[in-house]
Amino acid sequence: MKAFIEPIGRLINKLTKLPGVGAKTAQRYAYSIIDMSDSEVEELANAILSAKREVRYCEICGNFSEEEICPICKTRKSNIICVVKEPKDVIAIEKSDKFNGTYHVLHGTINPLENIGPNDIRIKELLGRLSNGDVEEIILATNPDVEGEATAMYIAKIVKPLGIKVTRLAHGIAVGTDLEYADIGSLSRAIIDRREI
Amino acid sequence: MKAFIEPIGRLINKLTKLPGVGAKTAQRYAYSIIDMSDSEVEELANAILSAKREVRYCEICGNFSEEEICPICKTRKSNIICVVKEPKDVIAIEKSDKFNGTYHVLHGTINPLENIGPNDIRIKELLGRLSNGDVEEIILATNPDVEGEATAMYIAKIVKPLGIKVTRLAHGIAVGTDLEYADIGSLSRAIIDRREI
Image (cartoon, rainbow over all chains, first blue to last red; front, top):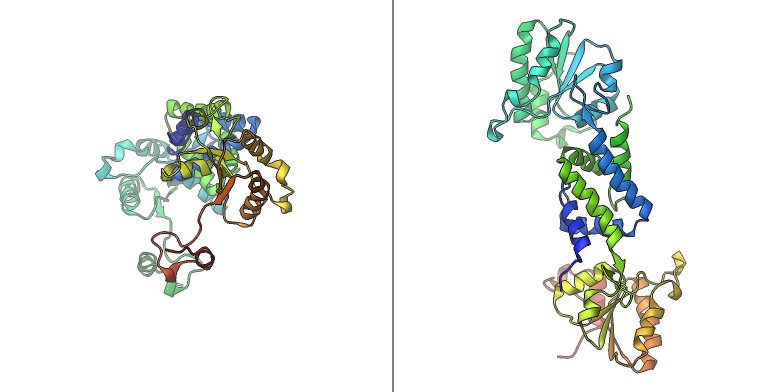
């Protein structure tokens, strides 16, 4: 006997397209969906469809937006741009409440192994934003991995000659971590980037 | 600045209705949905809607079915009924390939703390199936927890006087587990239920 009847099998199959969802988890989700009320199921399906339909990318910064220009670009006048890899990084920085400037989402990082070069991410668009001379600083907030560092270096090399200050997010021992529990990478970084007090 | 634009916030909210999905996971799922192609998103939403619409319960056994009577009840003639708590238990037993009879899904177990009594689960329907005298054995395959045991005992007490053999799935040390690693519950059960060889 086939394990699942067709509509359940199909739903499980589609749910495994979500990141990190295997067959077991998809099965749990599928059963819970069948157990939901009709209206709950409809709301879930509609939320999926309308998120895909209504979400576009801001023409300036590349972040998620409902309109041509996102609320941050529309309301904040700033001469500091924070450059990030993905829209979710904007959320993370906004949550810190420590940055009040605008963003630039690259939608990727340079990665020769996957054939992603500087022209495949939104670097051109970033340079376009710098051309009017208003921007005084860009903060390179790509991740501290190989691709993130390479991308930061690449952008720094182009932007510095324009007379714009280029900074990088500080990396080091996470706040609240004891020295003995700090991972080697963070500790090395903390030593190299030590600051005078 | 609000963390999420409205369509994304709404999608995240709906996704947290899935079992075990918190805000972080829902956010990951939402972003991956926005990154999918239009057709993939549509297929996902349709799979959700049609699973809810097309899946009903078999009128005999209570398992998921596309039609009035499920394929198992339709094709298997058996005088052994395996009684389980939920449809997913049917899948688990079918995968073992050791049972070729029919099922009866209770859709719950007796649980006084949550006000679920014998009349709230499909026990009446089970007794109805026993009335024609064809059934020779019922296997009580509810879980070995308090509610599962209580439900099994309750059903056994009613069914035994009808002259029908009542059995319970064997519980004990999981196959492949060393004695020293067996949990106390399984080990106690294995000793109590020891069999002569």
